[in-house]
Image (cartoon, rainbow, N blue to C red; front, side, top):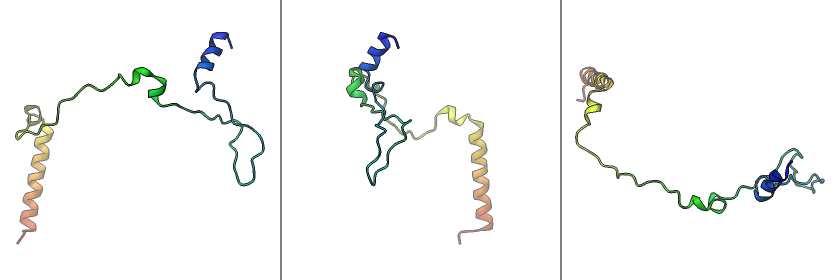
Amino acid sequence: MNPSSADKVAENPVLAAEPPSTTEPSAGSEAAPSSMVEIKIAPASTTNPEAKKATRPASKPFTATRDAPLYLLLNPLIWILWLLDFLAWLLITIFYPPW
């Protein structure tokens, strides 16, 4: 490991994490296998001061319209679904009248 890598490890708390001790567990507790390493991750606000500045841009508020937009009306799948919905309504009304 070259000196620059060692400096990076010392500065970064995630890379500097040490594996848990391999001593015998006390009665009633379970020890993690020696191959596992405990990694502690700090919240982004403490590790990156620029994280607070990064916010989402303001979006337009939701608005409902009475009419569908043109691109929706020109979609052929919508016409097929509308036709199937109408046929289902018609058949249900004929074979199972509400009265």
